[in-house]
Length: 292
Image (cartoon, rainbow, N blue to C red; front, side, top):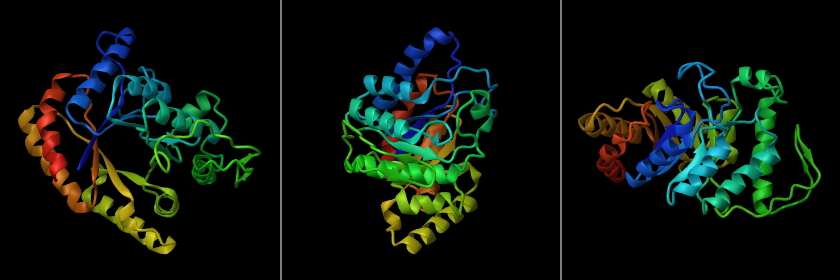
């Protein structure tokens, strides 16, 4: 079982000037603990269940570029970018750049998007009403084309690119793994089957719910002739780190349940990731999880 950590808030006790050093400490602590992946949300405002929208929120790809410079082994990605936030060629270029500067450690986290308040407040060009699932499928197709080195004109349902050049190419081969977030059964999970290397679901939605979502994904794979086992199954897990005993018992138990359900990569939303004492406690638990 792989282990990831999502960094989802930046309102640290010493204020905005401490963000840089805190991010570095979190990233190094996680990497030293053997954590496989680090993730940031792709939001411009804090989301409601994590704090007021005026809380500090860092831009995702600039932050990931910084994390790439202070780490050596950990995979990096957004959980996940909404297609309503960026035009697709710019997004693919950003992920390619992240992959190059990190030495081939980028995930391409992508989804249809949901937070229309941000798109409207910041006058972003593509709110939720703008054919977001067509945009998502175009972006997935374009990513495959641009990462193959094919520079012929691209004509999608929404986007029309006359010359989609992408140099330098990503270091990850055949391309950065494409993680599609969301559990929509008719559209999102079908796109996972057709275009994705990984899916991402919410484990805390309930065991029966996520198992059903994976059954739906398996059916979509059968329909399009895709090997279901090729797709990495990841899930975001809300988990409160209290002490080492809590990590050893509760987290290992959760990971075992997830593995039984079919998941191979748990991503922790721990809420107190700025408590740097967590990472020394996490190291031995990560080793156990890797053995599952």
